[in-house]
Length: 291
Ligand SMILES: Nc1ncnc2c1ncn2[C@@H]1O[C@H](COP(=O)(O)OP(=O)(O)O)[C@@H](O)[C@H]1O
Ligand SMILES: [Mg+2]
Image (tube, rainbow, N blue to C red; front, side):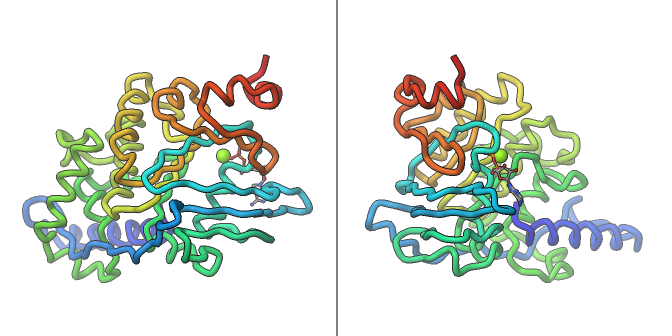
């Protein structure tokens, strides 16, 4: 989730608690949101790439976490990223989303947007959604409210308590609820969902903003086998409509969803190909898969 959204959630929760203290209840038992759909600017993908990294490097105290990393992703592609702990997978996502500035290299969204010129919040607004490892839904809000909140770009929380979603927004919310398998749980508090359901809800919150590119860091870690299978279906259903970059260690999950797998090691690309190809690569076996 974006820092903006986290802040917004905390503000909204505080506003609601204040309102409850005043003895008022929200109409229909839920808060409705004054919000507008985010309209991401045009991303030029005529060169066949939605994301493009070239010779990107970053050091932390002299240690090269990312080392001349070059990689690109096609529009609608579902790219899987694997690699040992410390390979730089999360740091790569930090760089794409503007959380970490690289020391050198180029990072482009489409062929024209130089991501290194933008702040983290601006990059999120452009249509790059990020899912961190730990679910960060608002536990004290319902599934519905969490999704509704994700639509908000307007910061006027007071206004948000008195306006309703327009029909396009309601349609999207319903659509997302079905996509993330939570249509039967709209009124449940997010805090009462299972770990897997919380992860889906957070993915749903990203989908509410209709991101062009979704970055997902170890999304099935801690999920049951059944939840993992459903997540695989979910990702396959998103492919084509969105571009996805998925970091995972779960090989059977990767096997189900992957086309091209990129293996990161010591901050750069060690190998790339189908899962079968990279699994047969001696160097990959050496550093990651084991003998
Ligand atoms: N902000 C930071 N400050 C210092 N070292 C960092 C920072 N972020 C990542 N690192 C280091 O960079 C390396 C890559 O980390 P990370 O990107 O988290 O790897 P992965 O996600 O592939 O496990 C690790 O050695 C980690 O300790
Ligand atoms: Mg990581």
